[in-house]
Figure 1: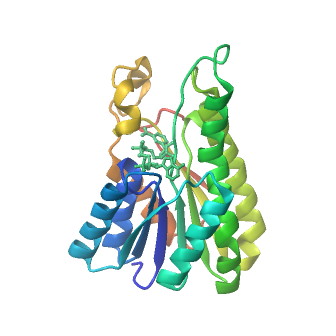
Figure 2: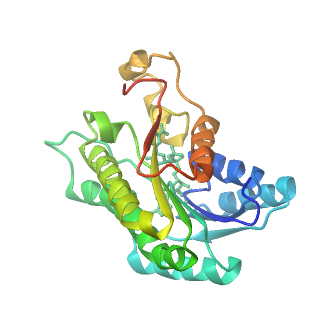
Figure 3: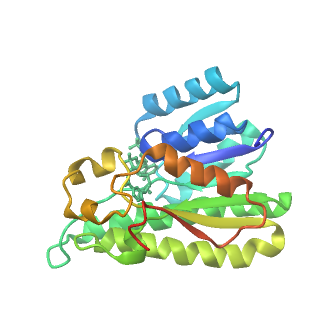
Length: 242
Ligand code: NAP
């Protein structure tokens, strides 16, 4: 159970992040939900967490790719909740395209949100975790970062980078009592994969179907409580990347 813990979930307004918010709230954690723009959706997630599970929940608008915006938001969350115990770096975007034609701004936007965004949040929470001698970071990467994926050089690079970042943070902060792990989803039914429902890659999933957001949230909940697990990358992918 996560009673008495505060969890920050970036990108918690929709899709996988929304399911993670509900799951951690169901285990008793207070919830800070970050979104980039869909504040009504984030507030609705918070209202449901409070109504259903009796936890404290608040929504924040923050572009995690901005170092200073992330800093201000972490400071506001600390003021509202007292401290943070669990950080889930889930916010992510795609700007797919072939490498020979990819626009520089599409490469930068994906790296800045998916990889630098996670760094920014970890950077601004790390001092709190070290002082508390306790902290749990869970980064949502992707099987694209493990296998590569044609048309996704920017996304795959950001997600592979996130795996390296996860392992380095795990090694650096383990002596301070802070764990850092990653979850690598495969094809999960969300807004992000709406346009890929006829992808030929789906036929290569050994379990023969796309995953549900709750199945990713279950892995996050496991890592939130797995006190002897750090530096791990847990695939939730129906077997596609084995
Ligand atoms: P989604 O439905 O598109 O939701 C993305 C979430 O990220 C939204 O809450 C969005 O906020 C937020 N976000 C985007 N840019 C942001 C920024 N700059 N600052 C703060 N928040 C930002 O995506 P999803 O499918 O649930 O994916 C969630 C994570 O899982 C991503 O990291 C994705 O790469 C990863 N993943 C997904 C799949 C899949 O099959 N769906 C597979 C592997 C990995 P707004 O609502 O305000 O836009």
